Structures are given as C-alpha cells and as structure tokens.
Image 1: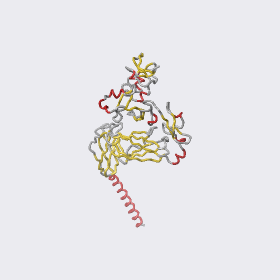
Image 2: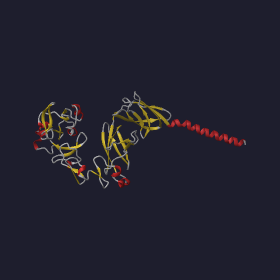
Image 3: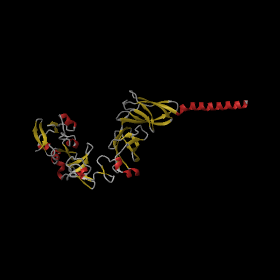
Image 4: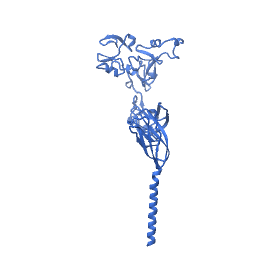
Length: 374
C-alpha cells in the first residue's frame, strides 16, 4: 500500500515538474518589440509582422508602437506610416526580453494598380485581392476590376486574386519607392462557369450577353453607339474626334484610338510627331502644329487634344451642352472657363477656331461663346 502511495506521489511530482518547466520556458520562446516612427499618421499607421499579419500594433500620436508575442529569432516588420510612406525593418527578437528598435524613418511607398479582367469577358463577382504576408487581405475590386494596393514598402510581393467562378490566380511583382506600377491579371473561368455561360453571371462593362451565352461587344446594331455599326461582333466607326473607342476601327480616317492622360481611350489625330511631320518639322512652332488640328483643338505632346484653356480633356468636351443652372455646374464637368448659357454648358471664345465640332463663336448674354450654328 505504502509502495503504491510513493509511486503516485512521484508521478504527481514529475508531472508538476514538467508543467512548471513549460510555464518557465514559454515566455522565452517569444519577445516584445518597441519602436517609434519619425513620421506617422495615426489614422492609417500600423505595424505588423511580415508573414504573420495577425501580429500587429497600432501607432499612437507620437509614432510609438509595441508588438508582443513575436517568436524569437530574426523578424521583419511591415510598417505603414502614412497614406504615402512605409518601411520594412529587420529586428532580432530575444526570448523573454523587450527589444527597442532605432527610430524608423519611413520612405516613399509604392503602389500596385491592379487591372483584373476575365479572358472571356464574364463579369467579375465577389472579386478580392490579398497580398501575401501583409495586412492587405481580402480587398474588394471595383466593378471594373480595378484596385490600388498600398502603401507598400519597397519590395516584391505575391498577390492572389479570387472571384466567384474563377480559380484563385497568383501573380508576383515589385513596387519601388514612390512607384505606382500597373499589374494586369487575367482570370480564366472554370469549366462549370463556361457551361453556364454569361446568362448566369453577366458580362463586363462594354460587352453584352449574346444568345450563344458568350460575351460579345455586339450582335446587332442596337448594341453600338451613335454612328457605329456591328460588324463581326464588334462596333465599328467612323467616330469623331474625342469619341470613346476600343480600337482604331471605331475612329474616322486619319485618327487613332489612344489612351489619354485622363485614363480613358478616345479617337485623336496626331500632330508634330517626327514620324509623321515633313522634313521642315523642326522649324515649326507649337502654334504651327496646332494650326493643323481641328478648331477647338491644340497640339499637345504630338496629339490634337481639346484646348486645355477650355477643356480638361476629351471627357470634358463631350459634356458640352450639358444641362446647367450656373457657371459652377459647367466648371464641375471639366470646363474650367465654362459658361451656362440658356441652361446649357458652353465655353468662351474669341474666334470660330476656338470652337469644336459644328459650333461657331457668337455673342451672348455671357459674352462671346461657342454655340451650334444654325
């Protein structure tokens, strides 16, 4: 009996010793990191652990942060300081101890501008983006499949895109300091979605669901804009200057479909390019080149674009004649000197050459403005 009691006590003591050992050793498997940013915005600033974004800390008004329960060994901090600045910092974590890192000076951050499309024109549904090892997880794409991810510290990243009916797609790219880099991702539908066709999920903007369940630009003239006809399942031109387009086939002769600085594509004519200009081109001034452009347009970076004095781009020119109640309405539409005349937006002019399309420079209650000729 006594022997049995001794064995039980010995076993209990051994278990307690093992338990106490674990309690004593656990704190030495993790450590704490303290630091301070030389520049930060508490509304957006945060610090996390690379590859363990769940281990994170907010940043106080003085730029201070504390990360706890970091595994011992080398670790890397992922730091978002402001909407435009970030940093990555390596630190040696000591078990059971607190480590104070040197003051961190964030640098200009990079951004990845995602442009996600489907290879068959199907509409994106529940599309999300995650950047491996960072706090940027399950970010939603907009209806056009676009998203700017950042601010990102200088480095390379693995990006995963998911969407309903499409297998997860992973791509890798790097973002340098201050760089805004476009990252295009094409998603291929799985077999089940292909069998259902676009009638179930719909088509991306600019495409229509045809009777054969495929996403097409058109299958009849009714799907095309004014002045365009459906040929071979695409809308063809000729479109006027500044008309929205997807290719040269939607533009009039002598013009091209180009992506403009404003971000959209439109039909434009070229001017002053070395390849297109005559041998005496070097002796011509900007005004000489602008004289080759249609009225209301000037030569800008080798292209005939709406006069910047009156229009903020092709999209603004297309808003001529938009309804208005005062000049401010026209200014908001991208007409910096716009005038609201007879309830419609127009622009000031000195001569007929300041007026685009079929408009003439006429006298009105608001001075000389461009109006449609009669």
